[in-house]
Length: 179
Length: 431
Ligand SMILES: Cc1cc2nc3c(=O)[nH]c(=O)nc-3n(C[C@H](O)[C@H](O)[C@H](O)COP(=O)(O)O)c2cc1C
Ligand code: SF4
Ligand code: FES
Image 1 (cartoon, each protein chain N blue to C red):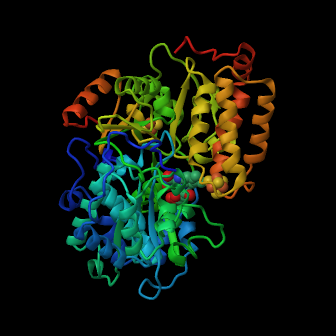
Image 2 (cartoon, rainbow over the protein chains, first blue to last red):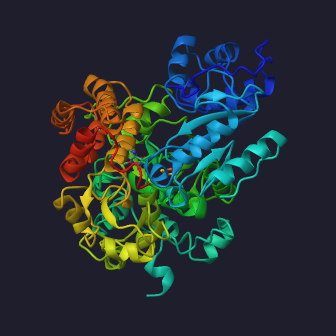
Image 3 (cartoon, chains in turn yellow, red):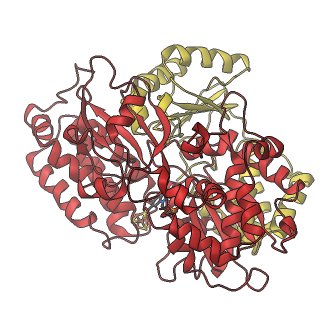
């Protein structure tokens, strides 16, 4: 189940960029190292998403071909996993842990602050396309709960001040972790 | 015993300095185990030593590691395709130990895997890592690359004729991937539904080949057992099983964290490390080893944290990292949060779990929001009866999901009743 609920209003739809040759070569190499081609499918999708932020139909078709799978088969996998996005996301993705230790330590307050300041609900993207806000399960940082990921940076002991600071940084395009 | 010997798994971890490279790792005593295993010991000798050490799996189920390996067909690696898989999915809420081991000392895991692969004669290694562990992935990829460059991975390791290499697979994220057969399904590029056993992975695992899946912490014990011997390892613990354990607490303790301590210390000793509860909070109950273990009440605050004792008390040691419920937090809300997680993470393969857990979640939502009815308590009890026992669902996800609910219904009965009677959360103002 993908946790992006609604299409990002601020993200330009348009035609997706051409599937780049270097990515094609890399995935072909991964496939060659697998016992069966489909063994590379999940990592191929991760790699593609890392480059483009999400997985569009055209790119999915390319990956399916490289992994000798049907598009439906590949899409069945993509929609199973939490971290694969089949809809566009914002420039920044905030994932706030909503599992038990973070809940115990005040996650709901942090969540409310994000929603209030960004003007969106979990699963949505801000109209300017800057931020997508998602829930995530335990990040293995429970001793510093509440925890969150901002893009690939881990944050701990998150409070409303952290939220304000991080939102400012995202709007200015410079996010730093402080785990 | 000096400090390093009392806590072998974490002795080399210096979070500020980052993980040691091969030279630093060797200088601090690393690679002694793999040298010993590959020069002079037979695969059978290694399995026997690990069996004697009484190491039990640290992934939650606590199966003996040596006995698990002994089910693998004995053909030499050169004659049969076999796999060794490290389970680093660590998605159990409240668990933060494997991340520490992977970020703190990835070469210890690599060494543990080389020795283990030699024991079962596997040439292919996979580390299945939580997809959100970006730093961990970087640490592991660097460690594997350097180990390969220096000949610790690849062909003819230490001139022994044994070949072994490791691939690091970052997960795309679902709790069920931690279940070992679902993990193998994910590695085969499919939706991660569990598989029926038998065949057990040791006989028919990844791509149908013999496969051993162990937890990351389990593998990290292996270099020390082989370097120092089973007797030394048995001497580390405070109970009948061997070794140390990464214990920890989260919740309203003064200093939540994780510490390597002798297996079988009491929860009181762990709480001492954490500085006790925060001022103004009292311990009400705890989940001893992750979200899927049953609540124990505060009267167990000095329980011996070994596999047998926790089981006798009605729960499981699980991952060994306890989640604390304090006296000012609503137990109904906590169980609602837990069941939301389990309902969301059901893989959807079998009906009782796929449909039952969301039903449980909706009942708890209603009670927590003051819209519960007395009959809802009976419906919850029905689900405990129908989903709780092993064997009614296809895998252990549902019984794990039901454990905190079943124990919570008994322990916090009065809180549930009050929510229904007063039609509100009775803790609303306390928080
Ligand atoms: C739903 C579910 C989730 C699991 N998650 C994990 C996990 O994240 N990490 C882990 O090591 N074991 C997990 N396990 C246990 C594994 O199936 C398996 O028993 C374990 O990896 C074996 O390693 P060990 O013998 O070293 O403990 C999970 C089991 C179930 C049923
Ligand atoms: S018990 Fe739940 S997680 Fe396990 S196979 Fe059935 S639906 Fe999937
Ligand atoms: S519960 Fe949030 S990081 Fe573990």
